[in-house]
Length: 219
Ligand SMILES: [Zn+2]
Image (cartoon, rainbow, N blue to C red; front, side):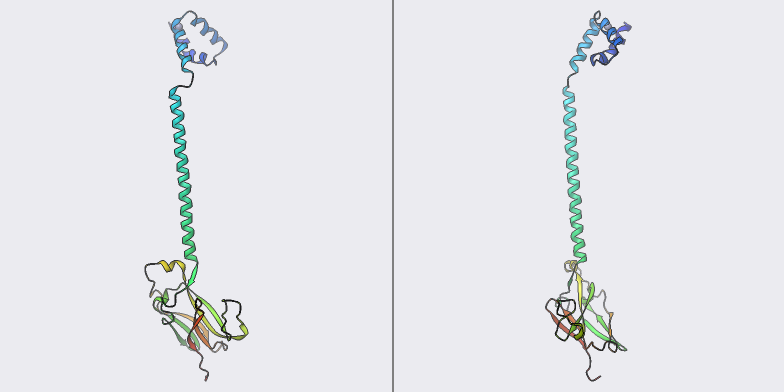
């Protein structure tokens, strides 16, 4: 019967109580005289409560969400770890320490040469692996500019340097020897710098001066 087909199409809507008044009446009228469609409606109504299949869906969704949460937590941990690593590296690269005088054979690798009246420093060997030169001036009381508070510029009598290296260089396996062998660093003009009577390497760790050049008092 063609009517049955139409009613069966309407039954899901009827069971959910969302069909029009007209359709509802038509369905009820048909059902009262058709056991086949009535049975179909009973079946639909029994299936309306949450089915075991739907429970499975919910479980699956919860599991998927837990998996996503695990991934997110793992991802954040990885990012934090990378940032800590980069921070440590950045710190090691950008903080300095004075080069070990004995390890790098300082000041045996330092020599002073003259070009006219200008004094130059030549750095050789493993000492040439320095990162930068930290300059200082001494006064006649033995205090050094940049170290402590006792330095008196009115009493200055010498010019000195301390070689610095990156903290990370202490851990490097390959020695940086001979990288800057023979590099010359301009120090000062002995005629223009009348108060500079000596040039020295300053071991700031042990507060010790190594004299590399001294003005000839007879000049
Ligand atoms: Zn029917």
